[in-house]
Image 1 (cartoon, one colour):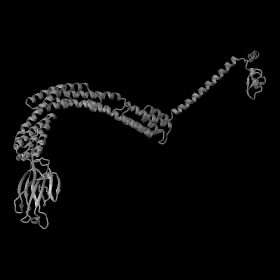
Image 2 (cartoon, one colour; image 1 turned 90 degrees about the vertical axis):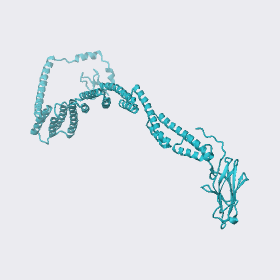
Image 3 (cartoon, rainbow, N blue to C red; image 1 turned 90 degrees about the horizontal axis):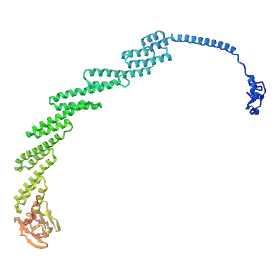
Image 4 (tube, rainbow, N blue to C red; image 1 turned 120 degrees about the horizontal axis):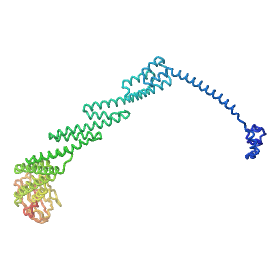
Length: 562
């Protein structure tokens, strides 16, 4: 609880009961509010109590104090000076000053004379670290050579330079050494005309190197000079009409500069100019070759030009297409002439081989396909004409005609030949082996070689649907039977007997037969034999029809359209 003077209202400490200002007793805390407004009487009393300042006494006191302060300051300065002189003359301070001046040998001598090898201090370590940085800075500025910088670092190491600090500075120095060596090598290569090597060296200069900006400028100058050198060489080649070599050199240089993300305007300009001259030269050369019917040479010359230039003008492209067409026609014509002899001799396979080989060498796929198709059409027409001439409408000749077409299909199958083959096959007799049978009674066999045989009263029925005119074959009796063995057979037309063969015996000769079966739907063959005289040990006497087949002798077919 706060206390105040009852008379003047001066705040008092808790343990003060008398006001130090007016000497009155202290007022209790609850009466503090009464002193928040100072009365006129109290104000008058305060004015009377204001102390009177003795200015002369105060001035004398100030002068005395000022002397004291000055004397103290002088004493402190002298003490600091003495301490400073002592510090300045200390060996470590002397070493630090020598290091700061870059006098590393002097610093090492001071260290050797005044400090032991094991003596270390934070001050010395700080001097050595700062000196290592100074060595790197001086080396970077080329104020020290690499050997001088290395010698300085050796001195610092002797004096106790921290190993980590040495490693860091050494690494930076090695990078800088490689960078400065690259810069020097670039200048040397440029002076010797090795511009690409110079550019490569300049580009190895690192950003920390003061010469970094200059190295980039020098690298670009080296690349431009390289381009100009190639331009000069290409111009010489152009004068000698060695356009291909000139373009190759220009393209190569352009590719090289592209790898460096730069270009030489003079090189690009000359490349365009050289391309125009080269096209004119190539066109003249191609026309001269074409005049001698050497279309292959003309095409090759233009294609080489296209390969070297990367693209052709519209004019030269038009000439290329024209010469390709003339070359294709020339090749196909030569092939047609070459195949005449083997074709005429009937060696159609050789003729097609000649044409297909020629077709593979032409430029146009359409021309190649048309040439082969033309030969196929001629081949089909010639073969079918030959087959028709051999057939001549006579069924006895159909097999010969079919053979002609079959042989031709083996060489080259065409739609026309396949149609004629089917046509002649339809006129050929058909073995009963290929006929479907609807029923069979008893023991009747059909062998794979065209034999048909059976036992007594055994029969087989074939479905022919009126497609054939005759049934033919050769009938014989089993010669291993008894001499008096006998046999015969019958043919039924839709269950109506229309033919009975002669009776043959074991010593009879086989007899050929042909039976008209026109308009038959079913062909039934019944075998007969006398078992009493035709059976050996209870077996069967298999009397047979060999080469059994059905065929035509009347037809109304028209040859297929070619």
